[in-house]
Amino acid sequence: MQIESLKVFCDLAETESFTKAAQINEVTQSAVSQTISTLEKHFKSLLIERSKKNFRLTPEGQVFYDYSKRILQSFDALHSRLQELEGIISGNIRVATIYSIGLHVLPPYLKRFLKEYPTVNVHVEYRRPNQVYEDVLGNVVDLGLVAYPIRDARLEIVPFRKEPLVLICHPHNPLAKCESVRLKALAGQKFVSFEQDIPTRKAMDKILKDQGVSVEHAMEFDNIETVKRAVEIDSGVAIVPQATINQEVAKQTLAAVRLEGGDFARPLAAIYKKSRVLSPAMKQFIALLKENL
Image 1 (cartoon, helix red, strand yellow):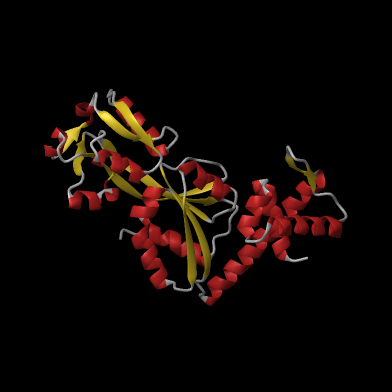
Image 2 (image 1 turned 90 degrees about the vertical axis):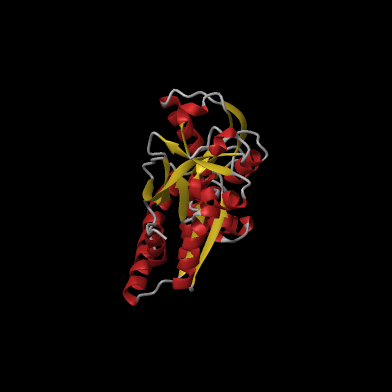
């Protein structure tokens, strides 16, 4: 029996999906099923109740999971410690990020990290916020990058920067002539917004409500790029992170207006499972994110 078999079992137990367990371990679903069968034969115990409707560990399977998890954590800690002693920074880092961070914040950090640590392979997935949390908790990725991080007892949250928020509008919009604007001036404006389940949208709604400002949500999208395109055709105004609109402002397809009357910035954070042992490469990656490039 190999350590990889224990990992496949634990990934299956945590994701409750043969498909996801296969994806995480880069094997086929058939290989996952064969691994489980081999473990059950070896220990002469039924570990999983096989049902089309429900996935459930047997009592023996739960015990097997608990002990396997401890073994894997000890193995990861051993591997990480040996790498630290030898000064080795290598391996793989799997990252899930929301679109705005992945497209507009991460690139310079990734470029510098790969230059300093060429033997580390960083794989980046662009995901909706809820999917980032699911991927981190399901061990599909090592790290998640999110805005307005949601506290969860299973997660470690590492804040790494705050992004100023600005109002964007079509260059011909009367607001484009203003250097700055108070939120109350936006009352009644047509807004191009993020979808309601997006954390940035929830934060914006709270800010507007606290200021007693009511707006008309004309359009709703799940990513920053589509929001910008809608504002470019004058479908409304939007409040977005300043770092995401530098190109459009330079090309004069969008106008950016500073918001006054408060500290309008969205917090960004890296998240990972508390049970995860950070490799030297992951520690260096997180440390780099905290720097001001």
